[in-house]
Amino acid sequence: MDRMKRFCSNASFILLATLILTSCIESEAQKCRPSGRIRGKKAPPGQCNQENDSDCCIEGKLYTTYECSPPMSSNTKAYLTLNSFQKGGDGGGPSECDNQYHSDDTPVVALSTGWFNHRSRCLHNITISANGRSVVAMVVDECDSTEGCDADHDYQPPCPNNIVDASRAVWKALGVPPNEWGGLDITWSDA
Image: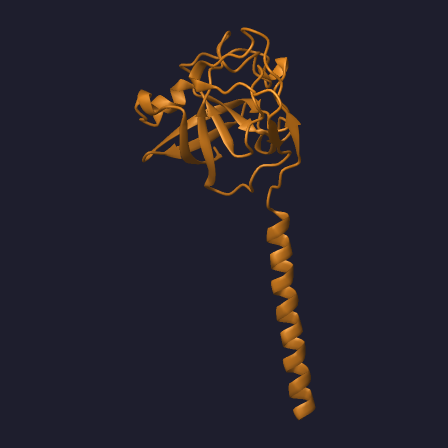
């Protein structure tokens, strides 16, 4: 009988250790790690639009790239940035989802590469929450986390992997004073 108790006790311990190890490996696999780096190139004169305090790449600086974004949840944490989707704005060319420009008065966003997920969220709505308010915005573009520092990306660095890049309309709807526009911790989910 003692042998049976020891066997059950040992088997229970091994099962518990296996479950804990599996859980740790699974949560480790869900983390988004950098996928590489690109070297910054200096923009030709007048080629980097710094509207909305956009950064221009610095010649020789290494920028981290990502092919993934943090895991999604019902309230995914992200960082809201300001972008103009209008022609001539700091967003560069037309939006990737519909090849159109969008008014700054329309609630639209670009998502980091992992969340953009090969265009699967194109023209779908998301709900953004911050500052005690929420707003629904349409995904129209990718905030590229894999490339940057070239003409296609307006000589701006790659986006971090946790960005929701939003039009002025989103910032207004969240009740953020204009002098505080540019960066804000938010949560978002598919609408």
